[in-house]
Image 1: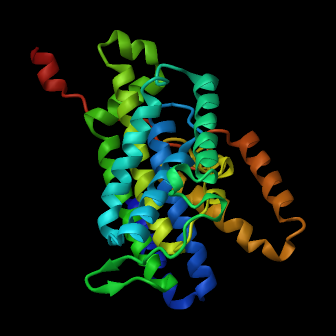
Image 2: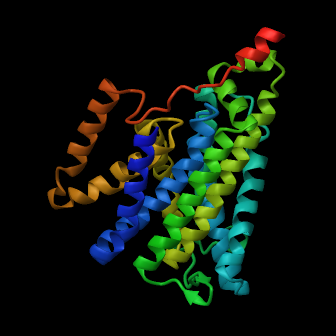
Length: 316
């Protein structure tokens, strides 16, 4: 455990100093890695901890981004104020779409969630209620402003994104080790046994879905303010596939694995950009080999351990 904490500390130090010796391009790559890592953590709460096959996460990401873009460009609401609003609306949307389908399992749930992300994308393209800008999207989104400082440069966005990632890791870690997190893990391992033990399986699944959707809405706010322009193409089914791959490849249920998976899936192709014609072939082959020899992921979650109060048990 101490060794892992030392490694984590060294990684944090290296990342914190990265903008000091990397050029703007690579800092922006790290920003994208951070955004995908937060998204993957929110999906991991649904897929990795609850066992729900969900491949429509980009829909909640889109709701958060478009909520930010519409309210900021039309009503000039500050970006920071819109973060909780974006998360709330994404969570409400998550509740509305998950409530009637939460009882589905496996491939059936997967297919329905694929339909959800496509419905959202098509609605955005068709300029629903005249708000989304159609295929052109929305332009002129403001930058976030913190403590009187407007965040503009990639180096500034780096700390904005990665601090939020650190907060996300802390909160999801607390949830994972709470009574709520243990119930989700129980449901993932054996849904029927959890129901038989008095766990409200559907209720817990729905709550996990909503929490993941809220966090994806937060990230949508960050993404919109970073890009200052959004369009439906940024929230396609392919984005959901990437997030799904990050969770499975990194280690379903493992936060360290999720962050490492984000580096590999988002950052590794950039390293092979000079081999543009072959980089995706190399990358795809590496993934196939990985899934054959380590299907549980690069850093699988460790088994849970619970302390047993032997003295009180013997007295009882």
